Length: 307
Image 1 (cartoon, rainbow, N blue to C red):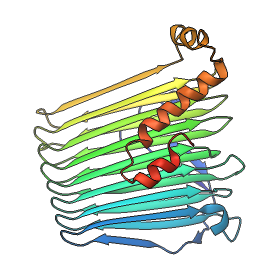
Image 2: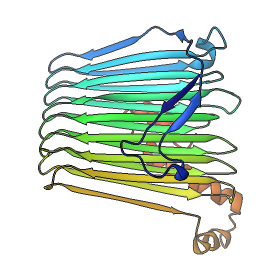
Image 3: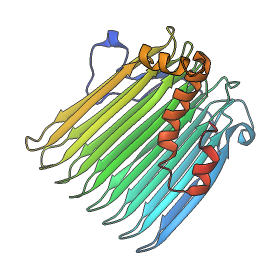
């Protein structure tokens, strides 16, 4: 069965091939036990979990995982999810709710090997109330076909959301990203920072949308992507989008896409560092920049320089 995911809120020319992602997946799944985590009012809570999709699947039709996170007023919740395997199709849906003056931090580390034939789809969506904050860190390495979708509604005044993403796509693998942050509250703020590396014949599509809805006065939003193209055979699509239904807002976007400069390569070569080693250094530096922002020290040290 064909599904359409990661759709742009406002479509562009079809020939650009960025309006959405179409996937062929079975509508039959092994339903894994759902996960519900709640931080009660004024509580500070942390939670770590590892999902090994390869070992959890019991049939070849694929698996589905539902996660729900709730953060009550003035509470703080940090969750770290590590993902392994993905031999068959995997679909995860994470829904969240951040109440007044609450804070939610979600760290997702997709550390897949390349032996799987399936697609991994991760969908994150939720609401942020007055003075609340939502922070998401996504790190992705490996996997034949990975799709990341995020939808955040900044409902309350002075609410904020930030997304930091690092990726490394190699071989003939594909990564599809779609982030949508909708500003509804006054003085709401959003930041999207994406940094990654493409190698061999890899393909990556990034869609980033900041939507200023009418009434979101004095809201601010910024999105950036930095892409390093290692080889001639890679395919990169970058589609930043800012929608303005409110006049009194500030929105900005930018992208840096290119190869390692001749000057930088010469610098490394004169110090006895070969091209292959330079590629490894540059690739790890982009992932490490995001990994360094992981609040959990143990998880941060586990992956720093090891992805």
